[in-house]
Image (cartoon, rainbow, N blue to C red):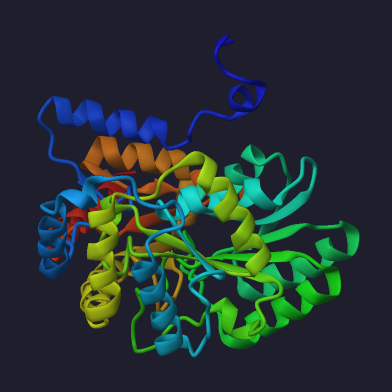
Length: 390
């Protein structure tokens, strides 16, 4: 046991993707060209207007000082106007919005600020790994509910709420990894459950700006106009292709936002101010850029799906996210880790095993559409070659 690690960290299992990551590194070190569809790290550049504003702002000396942990007013005001413009939701930038250093930081500190030790938190399974571990870091008891279909998740949620007193229900739609999407009526029903059972709903809305066929994902907050039970986590990472900038927001219920703001005031001084200023430009002036980014991902998704379905993979239909979620053909015996390792070693193509997102993800793989179409086409040809060699 590491004497400088507490019991909580010691009990965290090794990150399931580590084996894949180590194999990628080893292959690259010997000169292999790896087509990496495993790590959801956008390859599309941030908009030039945002980059230029960052450079301009960074050259102003006063912007080098500490910022404020809740985010500058202009940035919070910009996201407030965006929510009004796109979702018809009225937000007070002073009490309903706090800037976060990306969604992972925002989620973890939000849970730490609203959870008491031993509180029950419901999370989806499969789900993005931080959704499973942020509640544990906050001291919660985690209840995992299968989320491979919308109806199945809702039915399982209702059963759990009848049997357990729950403090928080943590969701994410559009969903990573399954790419499932929901309509406003689904959120209406969730909010009604929150009123009946008195829990806080948190929606990780990281993929809200990546959508196809003009089917825009709805906001949870629209179903809770008084913001009594809901917080939404919004991010510039995917839609604006600003992953490394680490700009996100927690938006919604005044009490939850106040608690998070207070906690963050003890932990950080906020994001580097030039990044906040440049992000304000993105939100205010670049509504069309996420649509351009979405069109790129849409073309890539169609390409990957065409190959996968042709060779026996069941692909989850979706109108959003930058991922493809596919069920393995029966010949792979539902072993997503073995398939992923074999694919990487035989074909130099990396994907994410579904098991890495939770036990109900076993038997599936997730592809991140973060290579250009030429590279994805080559990956799919390698993919097919490997699948036919077994």
